[in-house]
Length: 484
Ligand code: NAD
Ligand code: 6OD
Image 1: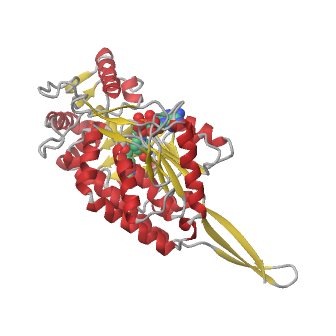
Image 2 (image 1 turned 30 degrees about the horizontal axis):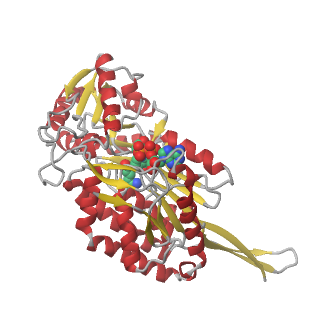
Image 3 (image 1 turned 180 degrees about the horizontal axis):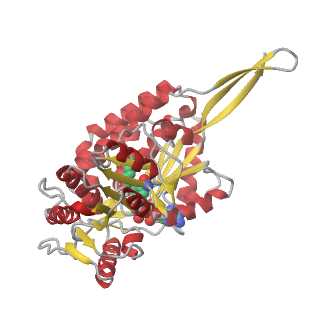
């Protein structure tokens, strides 16, 4: 059994909150204890982060900070197998995913934002003054201060470092509240921070749940200068309300009900490969995943059958086994949520093409399994088609015209991501411009260049992170006007 302690001011400390078990989603076994932070530890973490701004960290040059960030990246890579095992035990996700996506991106995030901050510039403006003289304006890019970082469980290290790395690159200090489901890699990162010489108080971790616990204590804390959050839209609304006290900035990366649009001129094999991942990868627990598919009528039947075959082709099991391609849902609660939508689809008269239940998992009966599932035939106002399920499932609807596909894709309160599949360049450009989302992929999905703006429209979020856009959130520009 591992005990996950809070990491405050460079020390691992017990929390005064109500602790809880950490479970292996593959078996449901308790494999660790999480020592939850109470208000006292959250206060201590925020206090340590505040103090660190005035210590050696606050006095470092950008080059010194960048050198430390690169060492953090190296430190993750040096302990790659430990991070990998920790992520797999927390999530049950297959090794093939964690070793290719989660852990490499954990390290890459530090290197990318080290590069970004070295080339970040500010504006200068010369001006004439009424007395015939002149003045020079220039902007200083300064850290905001203490940043509260609240994270979900689906890509724990990737999504946490996506925020911690730019925050630190910009000279802030952070207090991270990882998801209660996935405390491991955030805690392990504390060891790396100490080992590479990041000063105490720069990176802090407080464990626990959200309402009435560490999440709420952190986001309502008056000495936190900005909050960056990834998670559900409803939680984002609560965090935005919390941040309104003191008018503190927020960056919100929220939920989605993403559409895929497949035109009948698409390369069918490549599309099925890409869409298959978009629907089922990581057990569908990817905010960018596709839970609504619109497929042009001419290829509808062939496409749906091909997608159902993809769904049936997954191999469940031990996530440490390289042959496993699908893990369980994160928790019993999330499994129940996903299965409740499977029931709603049944009750709503959906045509089931694959999955729809729980696989028979001998030896792993206690795990939180759900089958990859494909439906057709539901109305667009069905909860299955309108609400984010966050499971390995998708509903496919036929369409006839480009205009109809765009209207269907946009008929949602969310606006995170879309993928468009076509070999017609003009149609790709037109559709990409018309869909109301922050991120559009054409003939691909989840292909990431970390310099690009990332974030959601509508109820999927506020703000953009990535590249210079992250620096905009994690710094404050202050103008200086000098009369010459
Ligand atoms: P969640 O909103 O339930 O929890 C996220 C984090 O917020 C957790 O650490 C939780 O403890 C904390 N929290 C919950 N209530 C809180 C409160 N009142 N105050 C402060 N903190 C609180 O989300 P989840 O279930 O962990 O993650 C799945 C959701 O995240 C999905 O909706 C998914 O779409 C979204 N997501 C979005 C992105 C994106 O980039 N847009 C990325 C990944 C996940
Ligand atoms: O790739 C990223 O930077 C990112 N934020 C991915 C989000 C995935 C959502 O589950």
